[in-house]
Each structure stands twice: as structure tokens, then as C-alpha cells.
Amino acid sequence: MEKDYIKWPDSNQRRMISATCENEYNLPNAVGIIDGTHINLSQKPAIDGEVFWTRKCRYSLNAQIVCDFNRRIIYYQVGWPGSIFDQTAFSQTKLFLHPSLYLNPNEYLIGDSGYAASKHMLTPFRNPAAEIPENALFNLEFSKARVIVEHTIGVLKARWSSLRGIRTQVKKQDDFSEILKQLVVTFILHNICIGRNDDWQNERNSDDFTDPEEIYAPQIQNGDELRQRMKDYVLSKIS
Image (cartoon, rainbow, N blue to C red):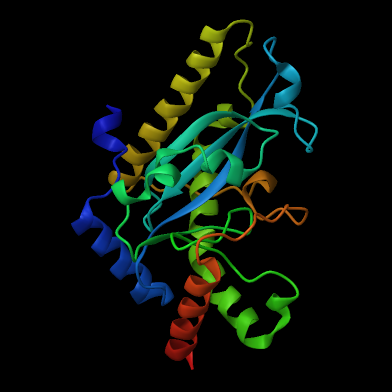
């Protein structure tokens, strides 16, 4: 069922997503919002268990989630240890490695400061630049769009509490495969519920919101240029 319910939007669908973002958040050409979250494991894996230990003092998997502005999951990657950073996990996805297969030259994703700013990734201003009034205003407007993926992950974990602590014991490689299948099933069910307008009250989870100790990713491939252009556009709309 995955191919029917978790699909990267085609060019027409991306135009519709972009139009929604521009109308509601003054950010043209954005086609999705990305964030990483920890899928906690109840026990230390028997295979390379130490690499799954995070600075939050838990064993976990890293899950990269991309959603649209209706909180529908349109792309994911799961399976990397929770000890790695979001940019590291994202850099191993086909979406990062082969962006031309997913994005037109002017299209981009919205991400937090844990991702590298680039021509296909819009991130907020960081301190000390974030303290400049016009940059702070842009960050405020930017956050209104970015929070959607946090709500998406919050709803996902609220629906299926198993995502807060997988109880499957990892003793062999096949156990990892079984866990990943479980995760994909919850993503499919999430999208089915979204399609049926079966809403769910989001439960705020500390893992799903900006970490104040987040280690910033570097900026690459004209990331500053994209951010400056979007800032000018946003400020022109709200002035």
C-alpha cells in the first residue's frame, strides 16, 4: 500500500503545494517541510548498540520526515542510528543526492537550523544575524510554516504510542527490518487518516520541537542567497 499512500508529488501537485505555502505563509516555491525525530527503542540493540545511544540518554533510530502543508507525509527515511545529526541522515537520502529527480531548480524544502542551507533548503537566520529586527521578523513568519512538520510528527506519535518506544528487541539484523516495516505502516495509516479527515489532537513532544542545544549544520550551495531572496519577498508582503 505504500506506493498508493506515500508518494512524492508530481510537478502539478508541487505547484499546488507551493501556491498554498505562498498564499498562507508568503513563501513561494516551497514544496515540503522536513524534520527529523527520534524513534526510541526500549532496549539497547545487540548489534552496534552504542551507536544508537543519543545525547538525550536513550537508544533510538533517526527518522527523516517530509510533509506537505496538509500534514501528509510525502517522503521519509528511517533506519539511521539516533546518535547522528539530521543533516547527516538527510545527506544519505535520494532526495539530497539526486535533487533534480524531485525538485525543479527553483523549488526547495523548509527545514530548521539542523539542516544545511542550500539552494534547495531554506533555513532560518541564526544568531547573531537572527537578532537583526528584519531577520527576526522573517524567522517569525518562517516558523509559522515550519511548525507544520512538528505538528505532523506530534500527531503521528499521538496516534501510535509505539513510536515513542519500540519494544521489539533487536537481536539480529532481521529485527531491524521488522521495526522499519512497523514504522512504514504507521506512516501509511497516518496518510490514510489525513485523507479521511480523521483529525487528531497533537500532543507536544519534546523530541519533535526545536532543540535549544541543536548543532547547526553548515551552509552550502547558495543557501544565503535563497534565504535573502525569501526574506525580501516575505517582508514586502507583510510591510
